[in-house]
Length: 187
Image (cartoon, rainbow, N blue to C red):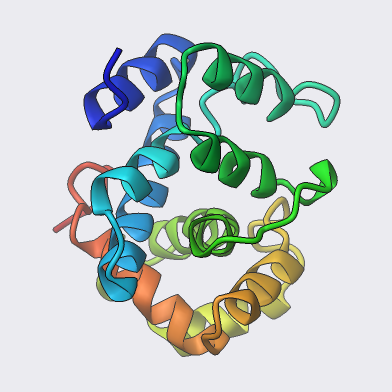
């Protein structure tokens, strides 16, 4: 079995029917690819990790099952161990250390992509490219807005990768804007 984007997409779509969860995976993939370019790393590998990070979530949405079952499946299928550990580390409750750039970036982009999508959807034009950093920072202070998104994870993620929150918001927004159509957002 090859461990490339096509294989990652196949696994994701086998386990995930919800179109919004698939779009989340695509957003994380885009952000991970952008970080790989920034750091001179393998875009294909980082993108695959972005696609795979939540592939088991729809079937296993609890802290007792999410990530644990996915990691087991990934190991059984022979996915690279560094990728599996990055997937495990994206959920702080696992206790798996984020000791690689890949793992730190995955954690950093996961919650932020969801928050940016929510910020785009409340805009009149629904354009991710037009989401302003200052508006996102302001929305982060509003606990009622996208209440399921963990703001502390967004801040901690930026810190772990050595970017300011503002820089990271702009970076991930721009990565997502590059695939806006795939995310169901205007180009």
